[in-house]
Length: 122
Image (tube, rainbow, N blue to C red; front, side, top):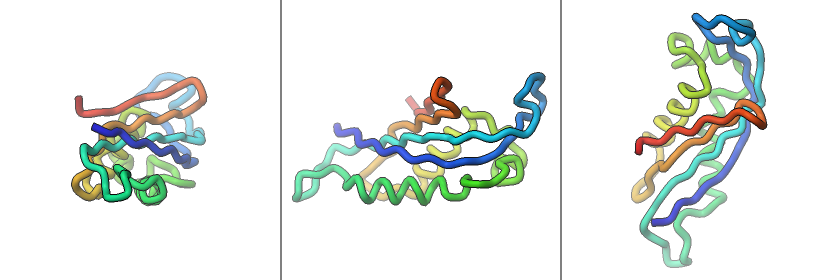
């Protein structure tokens, strides 16, 4: 099995509902996301997935979250925009759009250089 990863970034604002603390006020993050896909197959060039394709794919998935207030952006207009929910949402969006024979392995999301969440269906 091969695991192939790319990283990208997006900037957005959010605030946490039903939370006591500083994060209950609107604030922003420069989020970093790593998408890892897996495949057991290589193409005739010996590649699992072209990094260029995967970079464009990830950029397309996260574009909807860049430079917006997440609390006003579906699905976070009703779901609390926690790092955990954002990571799972990116995973599910990528999973729906990723072509066969590839599968999403995991999504890692940093809200800062010291805070990270990872989502996988393991």
